[in-house]
Length: 227
Ligand code: DX5
Ligand code: ZN
Image 1 (cartoon, helix red, strand yellow):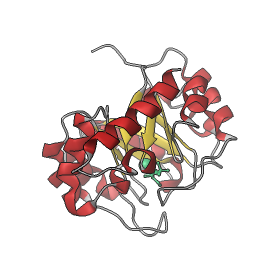
Image 2 (cartoon, protein in one colour):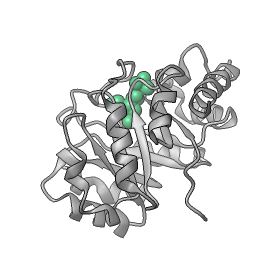
Image 3 (spheres, helix red, strand yellow):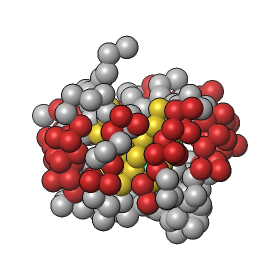
């Protein structure tokens, strides 16, 4: 399959109804989601606790698109195998989460998943400049990770543009996460991001009983990004 740099909207299920994750995933996919973004957190690397590999495995059968798993855990290495076996298509680790990032990326690919690197806002792109062959996705954080519903950080637009220039023709996705909505989507898409994570901006106002709201929200973000 050729590498796809078109805009992909990835709803973060952190903003979904956790008692109803399977139905929530089916609803956003039916309403146009391209990827499903999953946010495991360990209460240590970030000040919040969310989901582990068992929940990822449980939701796997409901994902028919692409399961994009953003690990906010440190160390990540002991859990790569479990998240891969749970069916993650992409496993993204934070560059700040361990001393041997390249080994971690090799481990992810060795377990059959695609390998992403997330950069906290204060971590420069130079951190990964020499290991691009080991990376399938760069996640430029546009908030401090840990919670949904935070305000987008404008100075990250320039970082997205730098990431896009650094990647060149390589088949590496550029993803953004945090505060993405119809107002901020054009900024990051214009700078070269192709995967737009959105939690609150997708799920707000909707429910599995009113999934058409999810569709309206997704279309609004996509239209703004493609404008
Ligand atoms: C936060 C997570 C995000 C979060 C984004 O650490 O990585 O994926 O769900 O939420 P919004 O889109 O509401 O900023
Ligand atoms: Zn995320």
